[in-house]
Amino acid sequence: MRSNGFLAMALLLAGCSQSQPNQDENFSLLVPNAANPVRPPPPPAHSPEPSLAEPQGEIDPKSAEAAGQLVQHYGALIEQGRWTDSWKLWSSAAAARQFDRNWRNDSEIHLSVGKLGEPEGAAGSIYVTVPVSFYGKTKAGGSFRTAAEAIVRRVNDVPGSTGEQRRWHIERVDLKTAR
Image 1 (cartoon, helix red, strand yellow):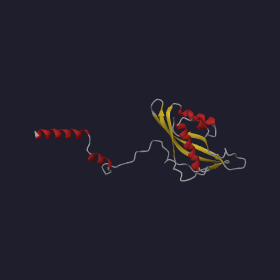
Image 2 (cartoon, rainbow, N blue to C red):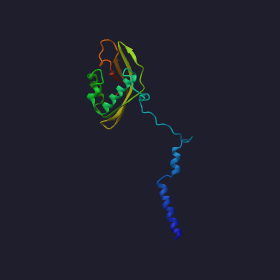
Image 3 (tube, rainbow, N blue to C red):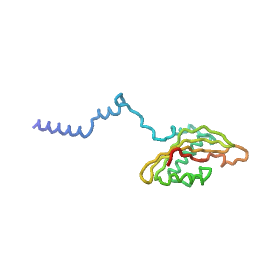
Image 4 (spheres, helix red, strand yellow):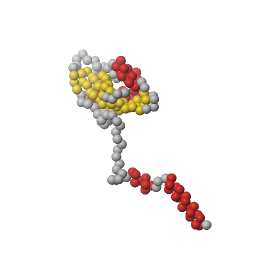
């Protein structure tokens, strides 16, 4: 009788060990070694440089960081489907509406912001190029990722310029990959 109980217990344990790997096997999958190095996942295709760093204090509204925040805000608005509000961040609402037609066939859209370019001056204005990546899901069920550059502009502090002109606005967004 004891041998039957032992045999039943052995079969039960053998069945359990076949359905789940033991803890030592799981642990060995997580420990990096020469045979199993742990590597970070590859970056998504067409992603911009590392994302905009968190501010370490108050941001100067004239700074490139403020331009980057404007682009992040634009991304948050379009992610929420607040298209009309997003157009207010552009220098031209008509240009914003035209650009947003790129996303007509998408059910979900997100925007990631890369490392900001250096501010450049031209004809009384300051420009900052912000690398971005639009990504999401299409209405047909697929996914997409599109690299782009947002060109953000503000007028210099010159006599006669208005407060509205001295705020950062999206001048245009140049898509780097086809849609």
